[in-house]
Length: 106
Image (cartoon, rainbow, N blue to C red; front, side, top):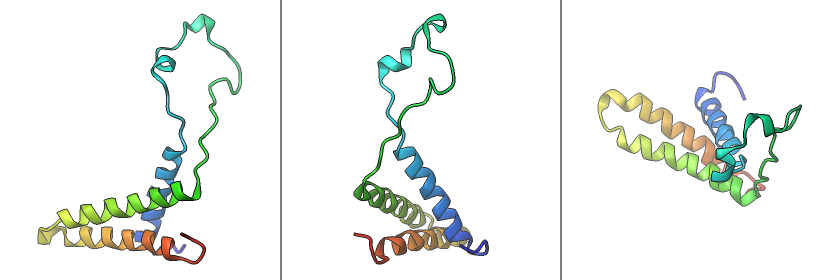
């Protein structure tokens, strides 16, 4: 991706972050309460949790949601002063939707 294509770079970075967040393991309420510091495990890797593995359908859903979010935000920017921002959001959405239309995606 060329650095000049700011809309694509911005959309892809945000979508990668959304996918990373979707892979996070939900924390239960019991885990939030925790244990006393003296009883907690220590050492390398003791705080690591296995990440969720997203299916292809999950990834597509996240990308569609990111595109929809941009289109919704662009639709709300009706003032002429926000025309550039709305156009950029539509361009980012087009990049994401274009990825979904690429061969090999459902």
